[in-house]
Image 1 (cartoon, helix red, strand yellow):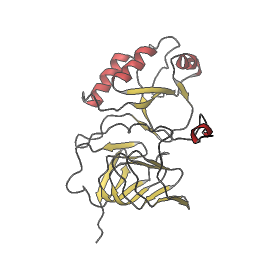
Image 2 (cartoon, one colour; image 1 turned 30 degrees about the vertical axis):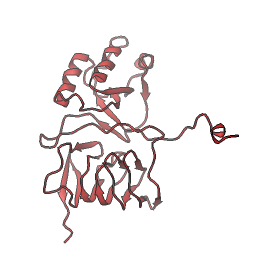
Image 3 (cartoon, rainbow, N blue to C red; image 1 turned 60 degrees about the vertical axis):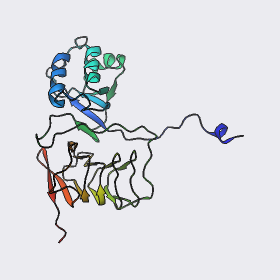
Length: 258
């Protein structure tokens, strides 16, 4: 029997998928489209086909069954390259019609989800969480977990995704562009950080991100995030730095090694 004939037709693996959470204060497609255009500044590729959770916690009152145009609502997000996959904080009265439109009911906690909000500052605009990774996405090898710390000794390549669940993440090698590192605690990179780093993924606002050479594409702490499409400032690019959360904004400061 050949190798291909012995392979299972299907394997199911646990995968943590990061999604954008859109907090809706209204369900009118026109108003939502206008708000999305304001967030993106009219940039057509601002979002990159991210999975999206529609969060109804800000709706007051909750719409009655049959009053939401789900087809138009879903199409509005897709027009802005956001793909609704589930609804969070929906009342039981809406669950049947939510499922009838191909959406799931999100009943998990707020771990590893990120709010879709306007940019925190004009100098460094916010951006969506990066594209979701398929369940078969590779993970970085040579990992060790001890005392609530995951240690990575090898480079994290583009397309790889490392998640330190309930732990800090320590990386001793480069995080390449297109790679994604996530931790429920803090992230320490003793090498260039050039990919995406998401600390405090379960809502830990005290988490921090450290790197000996800060060049990240995107950073996030407890759901507050920034992207650096236009690069880092000359005072911080490629230099030791730390990132921490201060209220609802990220503070990025240099680290002196002297």
